[in-house]
Image (cartoon, rainbow, N blue to C red; front, side, top):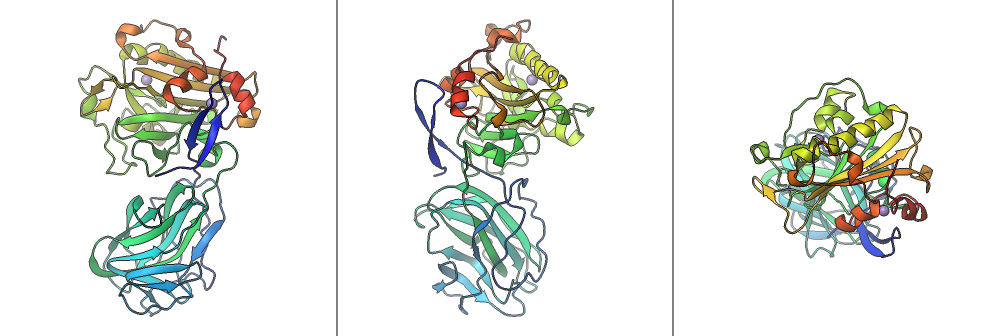
Length: 455
Ligand code: MN
Ligand code: MN
């Protein structure tokens, strides 16, 4: 249902085909429809992401070219192609909120549906929305179909329209290939909603997986397919780290973050462990009760002590989506020692990119209501010489520290040095199926991923 283009991991003797999502953050600049000017300023959308990269609009529909004055379902030819409006019409009255002279008006459970496909995928979709006249607030959602409308899936969360002037809803899609969209009113009320200025950006790749375009925290590449449409590889881009969340296991698949002196300050450890309130409510999550009495620690992937520049940054590491059930001898022993070693390298002026997660098998244990316990925990640390360096600065001599640590107290001692658990990146890739450092030149990857750190 998701994802993009085939690429090959050249980093070892076997060639592994992988589907890798190339995701990127939403554009800051909203592209308005060709004619007219906005009648009101778009508001901020609290659901929109952390914009880092601008993209050009690939499609922009403002409903200016069509005539449809009745609510009954029928097709209408617009600038971008044919759309079907069902319990919806093209409004041009004084009560229609619009850019230019027209916008779409939807009532009941009406739909506004593309009757054509885009073939260049979709990165983001932005839509202006407002209540018609003085109508009551309404609920609506964006849906996508990759099979010409045979089946549909909702994109992101449902949105509320509460204002009589336009707000901007931004949806992160990041799907490649054939795709079309439908806007559905979901509250079935007689209240009416205006939508206008539908802008769809192309799905964009570039080199590697486009990790840097998604977030600075995935600068070395996106380790495995992830999207906001996959409940078992749900993409969550946070200010402090990026994670792929697995709602079947209720733990992350991987967490990726940058660390350099700008992340280190004097904020106190917040200890506010809690479910991740930024994930959709429909995604099953671990609860505090799942861990209590389980015998396992709530093991941070991105450590609390890596995020001390503000209270908010530290608090963000206490989402349970950033945790796995971790054996105490692992978490409080060699794992903690390696976390500390990483910060020592930062104190020495290094720039680090870190990826961490669990290794699972069909026999992995669970705690509580189905929170999977990893058999091992892994970590990959790329050590760059100067703050601000990225994949282009990684050479065959760049230090990469990779470890896999048993996640059972019987197999690891708190007094063990972290160095006892060093492995190659290739070894972690082999058991997880991930492709780490995928935005690093493949010839360089093949060298640094085969080597075991010995410094
Ligand atoms: Mn820990
Ligand atoms: Mn790799």
